[in-house]
Length: 115
Length: 113
Image (cartoon, rainbow over all chains, first blue to last red; front, side):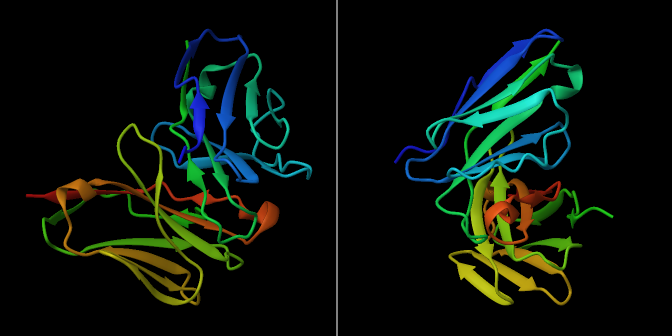
């Protein structure tokens, strides 16, 4: 079956521009997560969505970052006024439920480069 | 102290040998533990997860958890060159909003011919 789908796969933009990254989770998965992975760093949690509950935004690094999830499915991560330190691979994951032992499955990521 | 610590490696093992990958964590409230494999330029791929003390086996892979020592490991038997990758250890505190994962920086495994 289809896995987590992310687009675009690569994005190059100039400092100060806004970018939108998209994630389409596995069908039937109710939980959706965004992480980012900077060069040489571990994966860093950004935000979590579960059903109609308020998202957990505790990992967002600044107010330039925001995300939404429409209709409980597709999610968009928006970065406004991008900075060079925003360059990273942005990974989306989904899981079947919210139990702690539900494994998260990752998409191929969006590689974001800020010039 | 990092929340999840792994030796960055590289860990080099000959083909056919057992590779032992280790991970320690600082949060005693951690409930579930995951091992992901990540090939260069690719996304993490789930290998195994464990949440009870002891061993859990799946094919050539065995995960071991010791909550008292805050230690989790992954053993890979009969290592193959295709196992060469970075192995990420991840933990969470439970369900709901606690299900977000905290990752180590990974151990790079090299399986030599």
